Length: 560
Image (tube, rainbow, N blue to C red; front, side, top):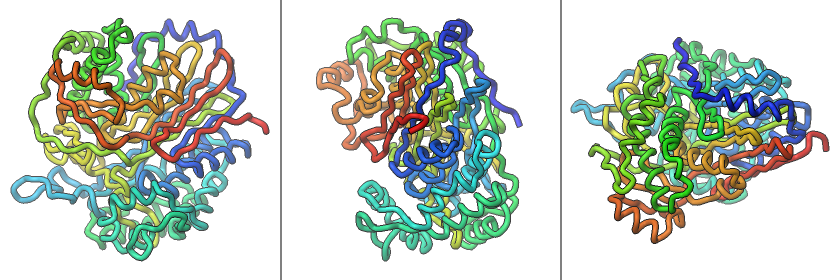
């Protein structure tokens, strides 16, 4: 397979200046996750002698139990790792793949139009999961504890249950019809076909058994043997196309992250098949041509940010896909010459116009992210997903594994939007064994004195959220401030600035409209950012869990 090239954008000077703190170790642990139970489980693993990578396995598995609407064994994700003892940085690509029987037109009717819901609900919407293989690989190659220990908290929570909260009930309500349509899903996630009441103890014994098989047998506990047979049988009996060969041939890929520079900061982010790093680097490369960005008034600064978002998201739709299958012009997209051309095309006084195409309504309540750093300086930024809330709303009987609906992240038809309003082209068309394009953007931002670990869920809005967070981190804005600041977003299509309540003042809105921007105020908040900052000068940590969610960020000494 061809691994995307590592993009090195002039950071030699930064490496030389950072030597001042090269040998500094944090002396503390920090974890920020989207659920208190996951944070507490990760803390316990670190206190038992595990490292950040062991904690990442634990947190990933626990989130899959207590946040079934966001991630799980039936999904995938990207784990961005930094190993302190040798400086190795790697992205573990646990993205799902298309089944071997998948084909380009599988979700189209006889007239060539997308069949509603076919790529979202039910087993035909599910790609081959990558999360179990990723957890086994991280444990074997980077952790110091066996899977039996790191998966034990998730197994216990699946078997003994956890208390349903208001957030769970809201997500279940959003997908109630689809959950009811599958008998096994309804049994596992509902109570007598209704949304469980608050504080109902939700137990998942079949999932506990599957996690136990993974703990005992590693990768083969999921992709071979009894669990694999149950997965394939359940999928095929319900109209899906999985085979045992699909599961047996699945492999994670270790990929070089994308690395770039903005001002005095080195940015490390996800590489393809995540579009996150590419789009983020493109936006930062363009912004690098506006030295006065932070001196602009709010309306003019927002205008410049929106115009860079517009151009980068347009390139996402045009060019990006799984680089193991298609030729992606990365060197061109990330070149200084192209960044200058794109920046020069921005009119400071007038909004650009996105070419008209059909576009849908973005959502963004699914997916999950966590950030971890341990006392040695090992760190993890990981974004995991099953795509839409509760994925495909389908569980193969006897497995407890809620399947993803990541097949909807392919370009079902050129120009047709997915569930998040994102359009695509042939580069992201369905092919057997191909990984679908993603927006997940786990990221490290490093300056001479500071390391920031960040990421968020949010569908198509993930990359713009990470951009806004990274810019604030570089300015050394306190993490609690920028994680919770109201946000705005533009993704080329639909051609409108979407913004949370209070993100833009009335005066800013008036000025943006005078420049020709269309604005779409949102009634709901979006995203659920989890971030950690390590100040190397003071050797102190700060961490924040987005108030939009129910997560928990903790900092605790290496020894209590």
